[in-house]
Length: 223
Image 1 (cartoon, helix red, strand yellow):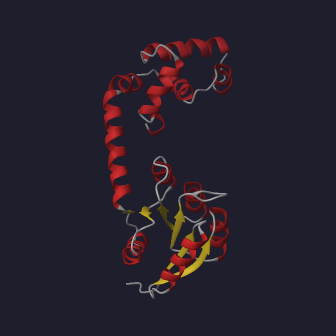
Image 2 (cartoon, helix red, strand yellow; image 1 turned 60 degrees about the vertical axis):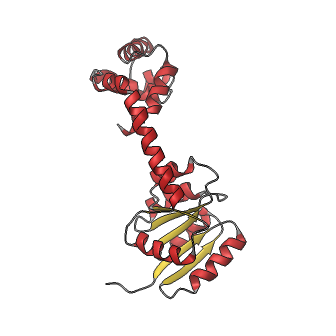
Image 3 (cartoon, one colour; image 1 turned 180 degrees about the vertical axis):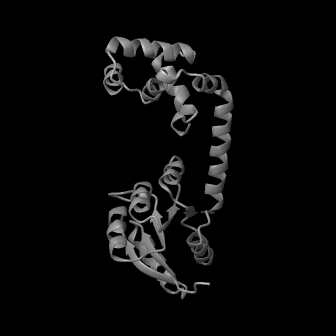
């Protein structure tokens, strides 16, 4: 068993919170606070200079917010576990940070004793969530499941779409203009318009906007 302290990086643009949390972490013998910085860009610079096990990132930071910083960290330093510290002012932040590779979401009022235990669990590879993020994950799952059920006919149409129309569908779902679709798929604009009409007919969509809405509801990119 490795008894070495967990090497932690803290990034938060609130100087008072950053200072107070740094002091609390520095008092813990099983935590090695290697850097405390004010934004996501500074976190990346610190990671280039210090080996880090767990990065604690504020959700709302200047330059690079928590989600953007997470994505950069997971690309450049995949061994680092990223845990987001948040006041949850923006409920849409959670799915963005999850997609970026964050392993945990903790509210800033988490008691220090609990925070230390959760840092160790994150270091071990566990997903760590405070009660509110847990509820948000469950709500997101329920909403997504409900949307997918209501979109069953659209999904069935997508599954039976002829192969030559699948790339057209993907570009339509991103609201790509017809000339761009033609260029990317090496088609004439007339052929592209014909294919677009076939996709709309096959998916029972009367407009391109309707198709984009359906695709967004079922998260077509994840299919």
